[in-house]
Image 1 (cartoon, rainbow, N blue to C red):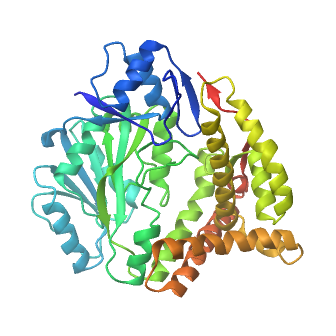
Image 2: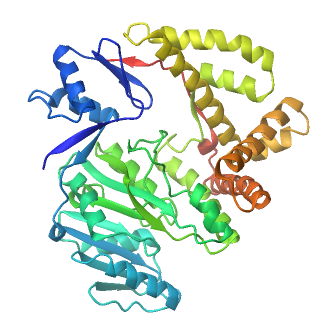
Image 3: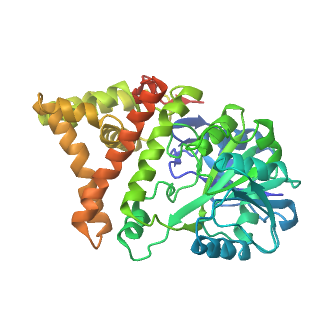
Length: 455
């Protein structure tokens, strides 16, 4: 199967056309004239030269470009596994609609001891006598798969056969082990529907990505997840001892075994919102509890923040309200990062833009970490330190205010409060998970001193 290559959104070409800067963290590639012709072909979506493999493999491995298959996989080569815990008749109706949308595919439904028995035509139903959780249900279904590709699909999402076939084309070869579409949330007119349509933790954005821990897209949800079955079996499938975060653990184990995982937002699958605010906040709390367990299996990968030491110092100065110090400090900070790219042919203006972007991004990520992981510490410390109080206030209130202006919700006051509460709920879960595992490592930042790399 042939593919075309799509440049990453952080792709910057130098003026003379012989280099490219892309990926997260940013990596600069210096290329020859022959390499420049390959980059031209990628940018113009033209046929690649015959000698492209060495360079394009490097670009693919760093996330600088993204593959786009030209044709979908055959439906006969794909099996869909649906873990099901059906609690009422309404959920069963939705499951029937989901199965009806997957016409032409082999479907295995694993009834995980549902209170409402699963009875679906055109699907093979396997049953658990006791509830074992979604990871175990998926493993039961995957064990019965005989095709080269499999798709795990949750019962509260809608996806079509054509979408599954397109995603399966990514995992035909051994290079990519798993791929996921964008999971959007249906705005059903309720407050939770409107809120999650803007802030669903399953929605990873509109930009394609190579998945890597602590990057722009650091995991893939198992809501809709398509696998190369051989790659999945190589790592032993899902860890059924984990009830929350089992999909994150699986993706990270694939990556640790040298198997790529990719996010393809050009395909969108709508997901039902939580039925109440309480259930929505409970979901955020549960996700938070998984951080410590994930950190135990994948040390430092679940850290709340990764930042360069110089940028982190700059961001801390800004959030603490030292405005004049920040203005003075921004000059040497930008000078350092501009100088770190001096061996490249990137124009000075682009280097300045990248340095400024790094400062803003680090400030935003620091504020996010304060609210999603460290808020108990900052809340208590704010009573004894005005500067720490300023950091906490900025981190708590500015993101919701930005969201208000950007999203214009129908219930602005409730929106503002819930934006804060969802971070508090997640952070509470992180601390509870840390207490249960007796490890605070999942709360520690990863501070680096690495510069941009030229290759």
